[in-house]
Length: 467
Image 1 (cartoon, rainbow, N blue to C red):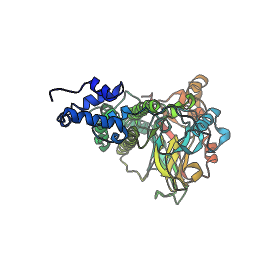
Image 2: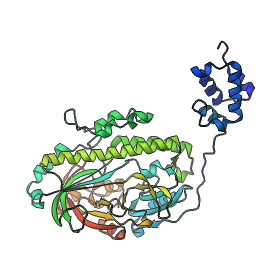
Image 3: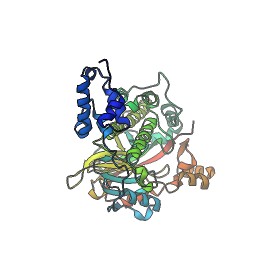
Image 4: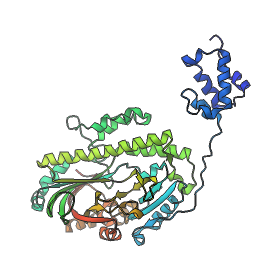
């Protein structure tokens, strides 16, 4: 067409000043729309202006139509607090309870539960379980998306560990990498199908995350992440693993989705807070609805990060098993920092967020660790509805990292480890056993939620910071 429509033409039609004019003019430059006559273009724009709701799903005009509608109010008020269940309430700090109380006031909240290892976190407390209606809360999932425990049980006696401490120490040093800088080099890497997933290309935000995901696969994070050899004691003959009662060599790992999960959490939390403006005390609980484009994007990215975390553990256990020349008798893996679509006992579908909480559906196996000097527990969930089929993900912190560093001394921690026969590679004062709650007390508080099938006692522990 010789004469193109201009901004003044749209203003004369009644278009408001702002984005809608620019979006409409840009659309008219598309080949199939440029063919329309001047009159037809004006008639189409007039129709869009009069009935923008009718064009919200139109491939050509959805953005223009949305710009013509008044922006929805993004300020969301909290609702009256819904009831929730606490396990081991007497051992949970007030800050964590306050955070849970706030989460139970969200208008999208349906139900909740607080596990006995709970302590203060960002948004939802660590140990918090929250069921929502058609909404996912990135910070109720957590930063380390899909963080998990993975246990391999080997047909080797405990004496094997006691007799080969230095050899097994060397296995951990050569087969595991920790932190942000130490990765496997070319020739050491193992491939994995998760790295070929379409989401890396289909979700714009993930396109520049693929390279770092390739670099970090098979490695562990810092903080409380570990890979450790220890003694597994199977105590329940009907343990669903096919492993006879008795002692075995075990390998337990704890880590998550590395930089990939952290970047997803931060990016989508920022977007959620822009579209869902909550009072200051609840701002970290901003959500995305699952019927929105951003909600679907986050959901796909979260599931990718969870699968990536699992792939990291697969490679850790594969490398160690190869170094031992053994195949595991059984493996148990469970994850936290995730959201699942589940049904409540009344049939309603909800999104269940477990931030630092273990899935404990009926018959579901998991591992709940203690500390370096306290046993972890191999468990089977009972599917208790009041807990939203959940249990604790560990002992939980007794001291914050800052307090542990200030109050504990290296010599004191070394003596404590030596008394328990634990060899530590790396680690810091913030991860000292004394910084954690008593796992036996925690397990006592949730005895109705899980059945104990056996224990895992750490003996050689590898964490970030040691070589």
